[in-house]
Image (cartoon, rainbow, N blue to C red; front, side):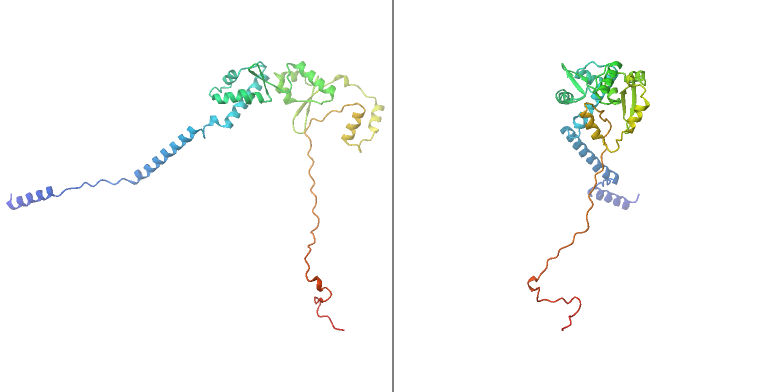
Length: 285
């Protein structure tokens, strides 16, 4: 090999060894740059939600809506079991077990025991146990017929089917057996069904002459209030209306014509001196 080339080769090696080399790192891609703040944002939001949930701001089980939802579930369950014939009382633990509400807190249990169930109009308390309290506590079909007969004798009208179904266990069967023969259905304009007692003692033939006399009495000019007042004076109680009351439309007073505007007059002290030139200049006589 040429000695000149060898010398140049050795000189090149010395220069290369004497010059420090810096390694250039690869710049991070845009995807890495975007992912990092997103992760930081997610971690910060997660810590925020964790802090808020630890404070109880978003805890569903401690909200008032959850509490009243549990109360509604308990009342509906007690109503259903009463309608099915299970009328015996239950303790709070038994109720929570049967309604699958065992995960509620002690604070909510205390609220149910001391406030919610005690003050609920559909629940009664007996020796630390709870039972359903319907409007009419009916044990069987005979109790229903006695109730309807009592309402008929006192002139109280009929009984809502909803109230009967609420208080009479297995009410559909009892009503079906007595329907037509002892019970009459009437449907109100608001689709509510009313039960009336079918008193067979009132089923008699009225003489035609009496019917003519009855229909000859004019009552068109007498309203219901006057008829009710007259019956009370005679010692007769009238049947009270159980249907929804009609709300009369409120008549608005018509506004009168536009009021005349009064303008303030000026220069009243010159009334005899000033002249009116609205129709032109007056002609001097």
